[in-house]
Image (tube, one colour):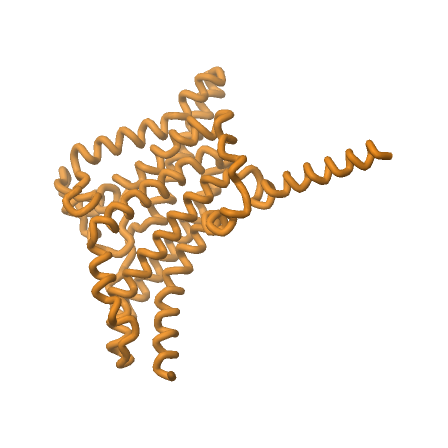
Length: 311
Protein backbone atom coordinates (compact mmCIF):
# COMPACT_ATOMS: atom_id res chain seq x y z
CA UNK A 1 0.00 0.00 0.00
CA UNK A 2 2.82 2.37 0.96
CA UNK A 3 4.73 1.53 -2.21
CA UNK A 4 1.63 2.22 -4.30
CA UNK A 5 1.13 5.58 -2.58
CA UNK A 6 4.78 6.48 -3.18
CA UNK A 7 4.47 5.58 -6.85
CA UNK A 8 1.38 7.75 -7.19
CA UNK A 9 3.15 10.70 -5.52
CA UNK A 10 6.17 10.24 -7.76
CA UNK A 11 3.93 10.02 -10.80
CA UNK A 12 2.13 13.21 -9.74
CA UNK A 13 5.41 15.03 -9.15
CA UNK A 14 6.67 13.90 -12.53
CA UNK A 15 3.45 15.04 -14.23
CA UNK A 16 3.71 18.42 -12.50
CA UNK A 17 7.28 18.75 -13.70
CA UNK A 18 6.25 17.88 -17.25
CA UNK A 19 3.43 20.43 -17.13
CA UNK A 20 5.95 23.18 -16.47
CA UNK A 21 7.62 22.50 -19.79
CA UNK A 22 4.45 21.64 -21.71
CA UNK A 23 2.64 24.83 -20.75
CA UNK A 24 4.59 26.64 -23.42
CA UNK A 25 3.49 24.44 -26.25
CA UNK A 26 5.65 21.47 -27.05
CA UNK A 27 9.41 21.36 -26.81
CA UNK A 28 10.03 25.11 -26.73
CA UNK A 29 13.26 26.56 -25.42
CA UNK A 30 12.51 29.22 -22.85
CA UNK A 31 15.73 31.14 -23.48
CA UNK A 32 14.76 31.76 -27.11
CA UNK A 33 11.32 33.05 -26.11
CA UNK A 34 12.91 35.13 -23.34
CA UNK A 35 15.45 36.81 -25.63
CA UNK A 36 12.77 37.40 -28.26
CA UNK A 37 10.43 38.88 -25.65
CA UNK A 38 13.18 41.12 -24.28
CA UNK A 39 13.91 42.39 -27.80
CA UNK A 40 10.21 43.13 -28.33
CA UNK A 41 9.96 45.03 -25.03
CA UNK A 42 12.95 47.18 -25.95
CA UNK A 43 11.38 47.80 -29.37
CA UNK A 44 8.08 48.84 -27.77
CA UNK A 45 9.94 51.29 -25.51
CA UNK A 46 11.81 52.64 -28.53
CA UNK A 47 8.57 53.25 -30.43
CA UNK A 48 6.99 54.78 -27.32
CA UNK A 49 9.79 57.34 -27.19
CA UNK A 50 9.25 58.03 -30.90
CA UNK A 51 5.58 58.73 -30.23
CA UNK A 52 6.50 61.13 -27.41
CA UNK A 53 8.89 62.95 -29.74
CA UNK A 54 7.06 62.75 -33.07
CA UNK A 55 3.35 62.18 -32.37
CA UNK A 56 2.51 63.99 -29.13
CA UNK A 57 3.49 67.46 -30.41
CA UNK A 58 0.98 67.02 -33.26
CA UNK A 59 -1.73 65.71 -30.90
CA UNK A 60 -1.19 68.55 -28.45
CA UNK A 61 -1.23 71.08 -31.26
CA UNK A 62 -4.55 69.77 -32.60
CA UNK A 63 -6.22 69.48 -29.20
CA UNK A 64 -4.66 72.56 -27.64
CA UNK A 65 -3.09 70.58 -24.76
CA UNK A 66 0.41 70.15 -23.37
CA UNK A 67 0.43 66.51 -22.22
CA UNK A 68 3.99 65.15 -21.85
CA UNK A 69 5.36 68.36 -23.37
CA UNK A 70 8.15 68.31 -20.78
CA UNK A 71 9.27 64.96 -22.18
CA UNK A 72 9.76 66.16 -25.78
CA UNK A 73 13.36 67.19 -25.29
CA UNK A 74 14.28 64.00 -23.45
CA UNK A 75 12.65 61.81 -26.12
CA UNK A 76 14.41 63.70 -28.91
CA UNK A 77 17.77 63.38 -27.13
CA UNK A 78 17.18 59.66 -26.58
CA UNK A 79 16.23 59.08 -30.21
CA UNK A 80 19.54 60.42 -31.49
CA UNK A 81 21.74 59.11 -28.68
CA UNK A 82 24.66 56.68 -29.14
CA UNK A 83 23.07 54.40 -26.53
CA UNK A 84 19.84 54.11 -28.49
CA UNK A 85 21.64 53.52 -31.79
CA UNK A 86 23.85 50.81 -30.32
CA UNK A 87 21.05 49.03 -28.44
CA UNK A 88 18.85 49.16 -31.54
CA UNK A 89 21.55 47.54 -33.68
CA UNK A 90 22.17 44.79 -31.11
CA UNK A 91 18.43 44.17 -30.66
CA UNK A 92 17.88 43.88 -34.42
CA UNK A 93 20.81 41.49 -34.86
CA UNK A 94 19.61 39.38 -31.92
CA UNK A 95 15.96 39.30 -33.00
CA UNK A 96 16.75 38.42 -36.61
CA UNK A 97 19.35 35.87 -35.51
CA UNK A 98 16.72 34.24 -33.27
CA UNK A 99 14.46 33.96 -36.31
CA UNK A 100 17.25 31.98 -37.98
CA UNK A 101 17.54 29.70 -34.94
CA UNK A 102 13.78 29.10 -35.07
CA UNK A 103 14.07 28.19 -38.75
CA UNK A 104 16.26 25.22 -37.83
CA UNK A 105 13.65 24.06 -35.31
CA UNK A 106 10.58 24.45 -37.53
CA UNK A 107 9.12 21.41 -39.25
CA UNK A 108 7.76 23.43 -42.17
CA UNK A 109 9.31 26.82 -42.89
CA UNK A 110 7.21 27.29 -46.05
CA UNK A 111 4.10 27.13 -43.88
CA UNK A 112 5.74 29.31 -41.23
CA UNK A 113 6.43 32.03 -43.79
CA UNK A 114 2.84 32.32 -45.01
CA UNK A 115 1.51 34.39 -42.06
CA UNK A 116 4.50 36.70 -42.45
CA UNK A 117 3.69 37.16 -46.15
CA UNK A 118 0.04 37.90 -45.33
CA UNK A 119 0.98 40.45 -42.66
CA UNK A 120 3.52 42.10 -44.98
CA UNK A 121 0.95 42.51 -47.77
CA UNK A 122 -1.65 43.82 -45.30
CA UNK A 123 0.86 46.43 -44.09
CA UNK A 124 1.47 47.49 -47.71
CA UNK A 125 -2.23 48.03 -48.29
CA UNK A 126 -2.91 49.72 -44.93
CA UNK A 127 0.03 52.12 -45.17
CA UNK A 128 -0.83 53.02 -48.79
CA UNK A 129 -4.45 53.76 -47.85
CA UNK A 130 -3.36 55.81 -44.83
CA UNK A 131 -1.00 57.82 -47.02
CA UNK A 132 -3.68 58.42 -49.65
CA UNK A 133 -6.42 59.58 -47.29
CA UNK A 134 -4.37 61.21 -44.53
CA UNK A 135 -1.13 62.07 -46.38
CA UNK A 136 0.81 60.44 -43.57
CA UNK A 137 3.99 60.03 -45.62
CA UNK A 138 4.58 56.67 -43.90
CA UNK A 139 4.30 54.22 -46.79
CA UNK A 140 5.83 50.81 -46.08
CA UNK A 141 7.36 49.25 -49.20
CA UNK A 142 9.69 46.56 -47.86
CA UNK A 143 9.53 46.43 -44.08
CA UNK A 144 10.52 44.01 -41.37
CA UNK A 145 7.76 41.47 -42.14
CA UNK A 146 8.66 41.50 -45.84
CA UNK A 147 12.30 40.87 -45.02
CA UNK A 148 11.52 38.11 -42.51
CA UNK A 149 9.07 36.42 -44.90
CA UNK A 150 11.56 36.36 -47.76
CA UNK A 151 14.40 35.24 -45.47
CA UNK A 152 12.36 32.34 -44.07
CA UNK A 153 11.31 31.33 -47.61
CA UNK A 154 14.94 31.41 -48.77
CA UNK A 155 15.89 29.27 -45.78
CA UNK A 156 13.04 26.85 -46.55
CA UNK A 157 14.11 26.59 -50.19
CA UNK A 158 17.74 25.89 -49.25
CA UNK A 159 16.68 23.18 -46.78
CA UNK A 160 14.39 21.68 -49.43
CA UNK A 161 17.27 21.50 -51.91
CA UNK A 162 19.46 19.90 -49.25
CA UNK A 163 16.80 17.26 -48.52
CA UNK A 164 16.42 16.49 -52.23
CA UNK A 165 20.20 16.22 -52.65
CA UNK A 166 20.55 13.91 -49.64
CA UNK A 167 17.80 11.61 -50.88
CA UNK A 168 18.90 11.56 -54.52
CA UNK A 169 22.58 11.01 -53.71
CA UNK A 170 21.86 8.78 -50.69
CA UNK A 171 24.20 10.79 -48.48
CA UNK A 172 24.93 9.94 -44.88
CA UNK A 173 23.52 11.78 -41.84
CA UNK A 174 26.91 13.42 -41.34
CA UNK A 175 26.82 14.89 -44.84
CA UNK A 176 23.24 16.02 -44.28
CA UNK A 177 24.32 17.92 -41.15
CA UNK A 178 27.12 19.60 -43.10
CA UNK A 179 24.86 20.58 -46.00
CA UNK A 180 22.27 22.03 -43.63
CA UNK A 181 24.86 24.61 -42.60
CA UNK A 182 24.65 26.12 -46.12
CA UNK A 183 22.10 28.83 -45.12
CA UNK A 184 24.33 30.06 -42.30
CA UNK A 185 27.42 29.97 -44.51
CA UNK A 186 25.61 32.03 -47.15
CA UNK A 187 24.38 34.44 -44.47
CA UNK A 188 27.89 35.05 -43.15
CA UNK A 189 29.21 35.38 -46.72
CA UNK A 190 26.63 38.04 -47.62
CA UNK A 191 27.22 39.94 -44.36
CA UNK A 192 30.89 40.19 -45.27
CA UNK A 193 29.99 41.07 -48.87
CA UNK A 194 27.59 43.82 -47.81
CA UNK A 195 30.00 45.51 -45.42
CA UNK A 196 32.75 45.20 -48.03
CA UNK A 197 30.83 46.76 -50.94
CA UNK A 198 27.69 48.65 -49.90
CA UNK A 199 27.80 49.63 -46.26
CA UNK A 200 29.74 50.05 -43.08
CA UNK A 201 29.14 50.06 -39.34
CA UNK A 202 29.46 53.71 -38.30
CA UNK A 203 30.50 54.02 -34.64
CA UNK A 204 30.78 57.82 -34.41
CA UNK A 205 27.32 58.09 -32.79
CA UNK A 206 26.73 54.55 -31.60
CA UNK A 207 26.54 51.50 -33.83
CA UNK A 208 24.63 52.42 -36.98
CA UNK A 209 24.55 50.65 -40.34
CA UNK A 210 25.36 53.28 -42.94
CA UNK A 211 25.03 52.91 -46.69
CA UNK A 212 28.05 54.21 -48.57
CA UNK A 213 28.03 53.20 -52.25
CA UNK A 214 25.97 51.48 -54.90
CA UNK A 215 27.31 49.46 -57.82
CA UNK A 216 24.00 49.51 -59.69
CA UNK A 217 21.80 52.18 -61.25
CA UNK A 218 18.72 49.99 -60.79
CA UNK A 219 17.31 51.84 -57.78
CA UNK A 220 14.28 49.58 -57.42
CA UNK A 221 16.39 46.43 -57.33
CA UNK A 222 18.99 47.78 -54.95
CA UNK A 223 16.29 49.47 -52.89
CA UNK A 224 14.47 46.24 -52.17
CA UNK A 225 17.40 43.91 -51.80
CA UNK A 226 20.34 46.08 -50.76
CA UNK A 227 20.43 49.12 -48.52
CA UNK A 228 22.44 51.71 -50.45
CA UNK A 229 22.59 55.48 -50.72
CA UNK A 230 20.71 55.22 -54.04
CA UNK A 231 17.78 53.38 -52.49
CA UNK A 232 14.53 55.32 -53.08
CA UNK A 233 13.16 53.74 -49.88
CA UNK A 234 16.03 54.65 -47.55
CA UNK A 235 13.94 57.07 -45.50
CA UNK A 236 10.64 55.22 -45.77
CA UNK A 237 8.94 53.89 -42.66
CA UNK A 238 9.90 50.39 -41.54
CA UNK A 239 12.61 49.82 -44.18
CA UNK A 240 14.55 46.54 -43.84
CA UNK A 241 16.19 45.33 -47.09
CA UNK A 242 17.51 41.78 -47.35
CA UNK A 243 21.09 43.03 -47.28
CA UNK A 244 22.17 43.38 -44.58
CA UNK A 245 19.21 42.45 -42.36
CA UNK A 246 18.04 39.23 -44.01
CA UNK A 247 21.56 37.88 -43.85
CA UNK A 248 21.40 37.94 -40.03
CA UNK A 249 18.44 35.54 -40.24
CA UNK A 250 20.46 33.07 -42.32
CA UNK A 251 23.58 33.54 -40.19
CA UNK A 252 21.57 32.95 -37.01
CA UNK A 253 20.74 29.45 -38.21
CA UNK A 254 24.35 28.52 -37.39
CA UNK A 255 23.50 28.84 -33.68
CA UNK A 256 20.48 26.64 -34.27
CA UNK A 257 22.56 23.92 -35.90
CA UNK A 258 25.49 24.20 -33.47
CA UNK A 259 23.44 24.23 -30.24
CA UNK A 260 19.80 23.23 -30.75
CA UNK A 261 20.58 20.12 -32.75
CA UNK A 262 22.98 18.79 -30.13
CA UNK A 263 22.62 17.70 -26.47
CA UNK A 264 23.68 21.24 -25.49
CA UNK A 265 20.15 22.46 -26.28
CA UNK A 266 18.99 21.49 -22.77
CA UNK A 267 21.82 23.28 -20.97
CA UNK A 268 19.58 26.10 -19.67
CA UNK A 269 16.45 24.04 -19.02
CA UNK A 270 17.02 23.94 -15.24
CA UNK A 271 16.89 27.75 -15.07
CA UNK A 272 13.36 27.82 -16.46
CA UNK A 273 10.55 28.81 -14.12
CA UNK A 274 7.74 31.24 -13.32
CA UNK A 275 10.21 34.15 -13.10
CA UNK A 276 10.43 34.41 -16.89
CA UNK A 277 6.85 33.56 -17.87
CA UNK A 278 5.78 37.15 -18.64
CA UNK A 279 8.63 37.96 -21.00
CA UNK A 280 8.45 34.49 -22.57
CA UNK A 281 4.75 35.02 -23.25
CA UNK A 282 5.59 38.20 -25.15
CA UNK A 283 8.33 36.37 -27.01
CA UNK A 284 5.94 33.61 -28.12
CA UNK A 285 3.55 36.20 -29.55
CA UNK A 286 6.11 38.69 -30.86
CA UNK A 287 4.32 39.27 -34.17
CA UNK A 288 1.01 40.09 -32.48
CA UNK A 289 2.71 42.45 -30.03
CA UNK A 290 4.56 44.16 -32.87
CA UNK A 291 1.40 44.72 -34.90
CA UNK A 292 -0.70 45.70 -31.90
CA UNK A 293 1.63 48.17 -30.26
CA UNK A 294 1.91 50.25 -33.44
CA UNK A 295 -1.74 51.23 -33.00
CA UNK A 296 -2.12 50.86 -29.23
CA UNK A 297 0.62 53.30 -28.18
CA UNK A 298 -0.62 56.34 -30.18
CA UNK A 299 -4.25 55.43 -29.35
CA UNK A 300 -3.49 55.38 -25.61
CA UNK A 301 -1.61 58.67 -25.84
CA UNK A 302 -4.55 60.31 -27.60
CA UNK A 303 -6.97 58.78 -25.08
CA UNK A 304 -5.06 60.10 -22.06
CA UNK A 305 -4.76 63.49 -23.73
CA UNK A 306 -8.55 63.60 -24.16
CA UNK A 307 -9.02 62.54 -20.54
CA UNK A 308 -6.67 65.33 -19.41
CA UNK A 309 -8.94 67.83 -21.16
CA UNK A 310 -11.85 66.69 -18.97
CA UNK A 311 -9.96 67.07 -15.74
